[in-house]
Image (cartoon, rainbow, N blue to C red; front, side, top):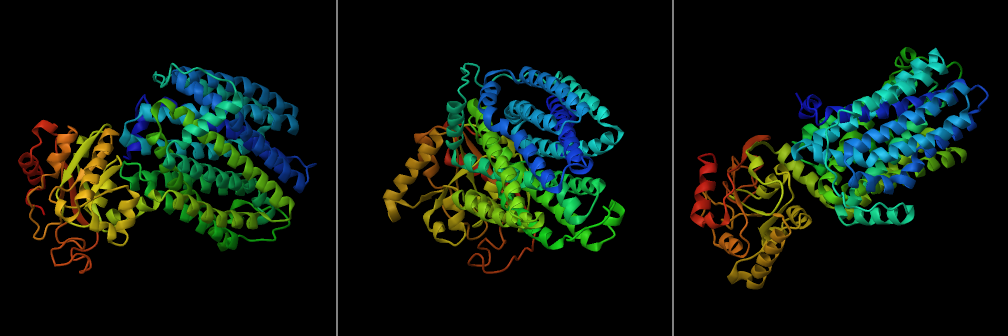
Length: 623
């Protein structure tokens, strides 16, 4: 059973998951009921008016995220989260009572206006929703928890649509009753969320929207990788909102499908998101693996372009049902593209959310997530405006999708250029997943926080990549400076902010700078890794440890964690057959290797002899 599914059997996650699932479901029940009413049942609304109203509705729901996220972030940092969630759910009940009245009156204008209030309630829930996860879950559960949240969100979109189609068929009065009942159910679920302490109870709440919005954006920019990850998330919601908003009219006017075809394609997209989210958890190996983000971005572009070339244009006459729709082989290609867009989206978005949660300052986490919501809102409003103006300019929906897919390639390449860590992590992920099968043993002995020194045997040119790909925390590697001259590895180690070092006889100033950088990294609470043999093994046996480790510990008395790599001797990147990387994969693809950690050793007890003995014992006879 996947670890993310196991979370559903825990009290620290299940009530929260149900609360957010029911909230997202109710939002989509209301919004889809409104969309279906406008697009399919309001016969006095033209195609042009339908396009305009659908996009205005999307924009009004998103606008409060821009206006009120700064206050929501402060509240989520200052107050205990379970009580705050219950108050937000009580507000949802009141808003849904107003929505029920609007459905009963069958007033499109009033229904759309109430979307603003729904957006306000959702904007208050957003920061507490995502800042709760790092408190409720352990670090290795964070990716799985985010996968469940994203799956639940898009499952709610699908269930909300299916329920809206079914209930609206029974009459708008039944839809009025349903939105109120599900709001009450969400509040009931929230009552079981465990108490979670406030991160910044001393915080003074400011209601100056302009100043606080500026401040939360400044907090988000303090960490470059976090900020550009937020931009990546915001861009995903630009794409997602464009697809979901335009899908009803795409189905009716471009494909010629009825409401059930719309449900079918949205189901395909939602199922794809769920598949991508769980696949991301599996591929990540229980760490926050942002190397998967470029893979998801590539899929969003390729399948978006293919969608343009795969649909049947020029639909007319009577709207077709799903069984007729799927008999056309070209429509199966449409369905495949929609599913793969969802899969790509899940792979893309889950690591970004987990990274923002993991690397944000805990005392400012909710406000940083609120900054994410502000930027998400800006991008979503831009998506609504993009949809309205593109369609009013005469661009059809398939072409609008094509333009967006091409824009996605440009935007993501721009982000990856600004933060090359994404591409660096992708290269690491490819190496350890396509060249080897890595067994991770006792890596939980590496501390989750605080400074520590890692020491490991040195077998191949990819030793550091294996460690970086398997260990949850970022690592500052100390590497012989000539490795920085090798293609690809140079990019990886420079991007990872590795520390170049040389011997005293070779370059004494470089060596001194290296020790200064090591000390600074440890003072900042980082993990630093040294290969104390100082070079790759020539015969598969461990060489003696150089005194550099002792010099580091004399400056900074931090715990030392011994590590051992097993099974890399004789691989393409080792020197078993002379120069490395000259004999193509002599052990075959997916050869088995191990990375094992030993118990941490206090600095006072970490002599060279002790460390050598510990690493040697961990390695054993498996070279």
